[in-house]
Length: 85
Length: 230
Image (cartoon, rainbow over all chains, first blue to last red; front, side, top):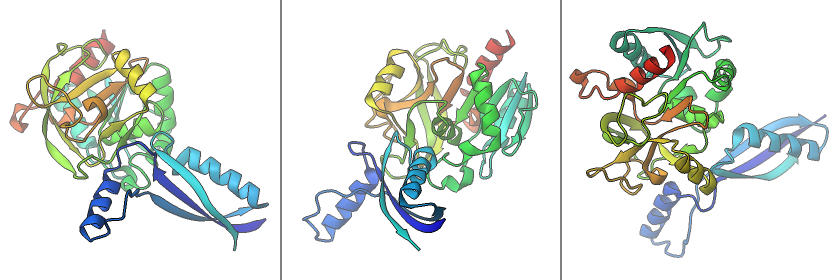
């Protein structure tokens, strides 16, 4: 068993109204960052886990995302990184 | 009839639900602790409002894995009535008892006010004491009440008459753009395909006494009573 640190990005599903992203976009425009076209605010989850290898850690993480960490009706998730500790 | 009211850590409308059932409706109610493994003979289960588990992760996401929810799901599968109010609606969606999800209000503001609802389907376990098209006044109090579903699910629940309550502003007028939370099609409450699970963001249990501004919500409880007791 190896200990891994897994980072997961969860963002609102594209196409759904994202009022938080819109509010942040507007605030950035007010601050003069007019080049910003779009903002999406989501969650970043970091977990530490034991697994036999990297692919096992990824598999297990996907399972966690589907069951609890993300809601597939409204969110997309992406495993951003898997690194050994 | 016996109502089981689930108390999750962070539930805060369980007492209101108890008051509605016992004092307004005159029926029996028991509190069911989230760690319980049985419904103690409840005929109807209420998932009350509140902020179970602090709304951590997503509203209702953690509560759905409470031990009691296994029993609640089995009860629902057997055709037993389940009434999910506010946080209870969010939990029911997370648990897959109802389609869709409740997202942050379009305004990004917590909204606490009395709203008008139109009864869209008066032929359900939960609405048979109302008339179709009847306008009722019931309070809402939530930050995450924007009903959202994929196009296919939305078409299905609309087509099957499963949108039970809709927010209305002007006389008989419903539009998601001025619904208090930006819900798709101004949806305030839906039932599952079998018709025995209702999820709604407004609080009928807080509208059972004219002293508190409205008693329009009692109809939900009376409807259950008339149908289940019959």
